[in-house]
Length: 161
Image (tube, rainbow, N blue to C red):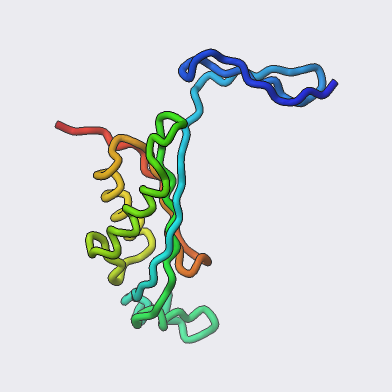
């Protein structure tokens, strides 16, 4: 007999038991409380370049793989997606406000795109997010025009005295 999923468990910190919708009402105990994340997206126009592309023979190949054009400044719409760990399900961090904060960091010059790679932008954005909302995990994606980019997972930093 197939049953729909049901959840039992009195507290957030207690293991959760799911009744899976498979024959024989199989039950699985989740022994760790699931981590919760919110996410926000935003876009920013920027100019960047990859200087080594002009001279590195692995990049400036002169054939169909040639990407030497990346060595000159070129425009992109950078797409950002920031996932942020939250600790309860009632607006621990309000995502509309988080998005507005992140957009403001680029608008007011706190953060700049300059000639950075997607990975460099993700690391810089993480450092600023961690100042604003510390002690949580983050996943940050930065892409060029929504096509190619990076995805970086930042574990909650350990405080060093």
